[in-house]
Image (tube, rainbow, N blue to C red; front, top):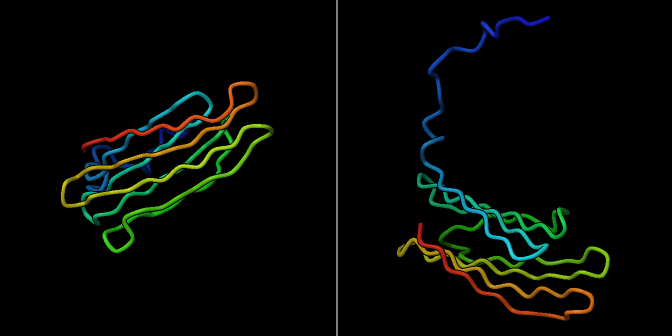
Length: 112
């Protein structure tokens, strides 16, 4: 039975909602999602292969890089995210291996 959600106030958003910039980058079965938090500063990232989460990591100025990898079936991937906080640049490098086609390297840079 609907309640009307009277316990939730209208127009009330946490100010942190406006301090995150999120991106998603995909190549074939590989997906990298990351969000940059302007207040921290920090970046949180999730890497998925064929929809399966290979890992998550948190990046900050004292640890500006992380590498995540794994396999699902015959597919393998390894992704490194590097952040230059002073320049607001995220660089993604990845190696993706798939049956029949073999392995390929990818690189992508995002300015946020």
